[in-house]
Length: 450
Image (tube, rainbow, N blue to C red; front, side):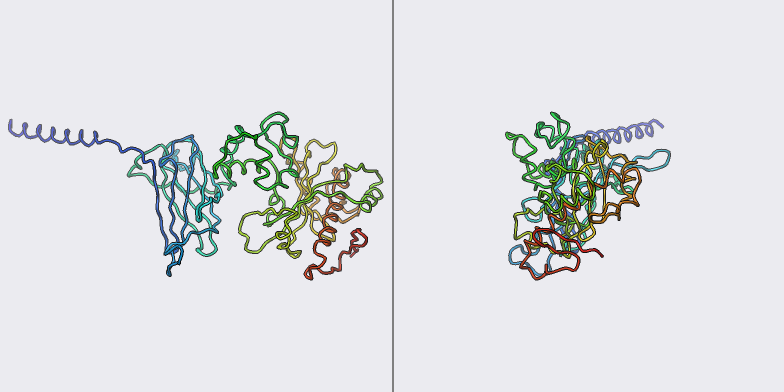
């Protein structure tokens, strides 16, 4: 009996020693570089978070490299060619929580990729709120390589990944995609944005509202140069993308009103004497010179343009030559409804000539807030409107007809100013030949009645 008891004690001691040794094994340090590689028949991808294991509540960079796997070697790239035409998005999903037997997702975000200078390189930033094993989902497509569909576990503040960990599922509905990490962009703006621009509000504070007719008429480089202080430190390409995304979130863009648009141009016009006479006769009121000017944005579809929206400078004759009238969607003008504080800025999209019907319309106040009741009334005017017709808005909300009519007629006149200029630009282009709907005589645009 004594010998048996001694044996049991000895075995227990050995087991306890083994357990202690197992417990005492050092935890491996977090890797500085953590390259995650995945492959399909057509694609290879390298996913690199920086740092290798990011911490919670701190913004980290997520870089991806996309390669097309070739059956016949490329003379330059060999068996793997960089994918430079991808439209790719990333979704980061926090660990799933279980409450009373039901699974739920605490946090999830989706961002469109920023293209990096290197071929086949794309990047995102995320700011995960808590530590844990997250799910990273990459979705998109490439013209040659086809669909992009990858998912991996991504540790945040945790290393190594626990053996029992599983990838959190994408929530339903999916997170709304944004053009970048807006939280990160806002933080960058707090450090770098000017407070003294008349085109942004609040006056003297960090921008929370930018006038759309100002911002949407600038390319990215011009927007950043205008909105940031002169002595700001240079931005990395990823910082550049997030700051631009945040600035664009403070104003309306072309795709907010014309979702199909893939290219647009913009130019300020002044309504000429013929348009002025029409407005003053129809509305029975006089206009100051400053009331007759406005920036006209013109939206175009483009074949095989992907999801990106391209801004073409008005003086870029080569770029404008690529825009075909058959692909023109219409016009966008940013105005305001006088004495209506909830419509400090009115985005008014109208179809192309000859009718200039209202295609989309939305308003916001000086703080960028939208009033649901007002915008519901404004939507009643969609499909209404006719050039120089004082009765063409009669089917819209009665309370807004008188207020909206002069704004709409002014927008239509501004659109004709662009149209006349377009005719001059394309005077020798056979494709832009005559039309049965419109004519231009002595710099006066005439719209024929139907």
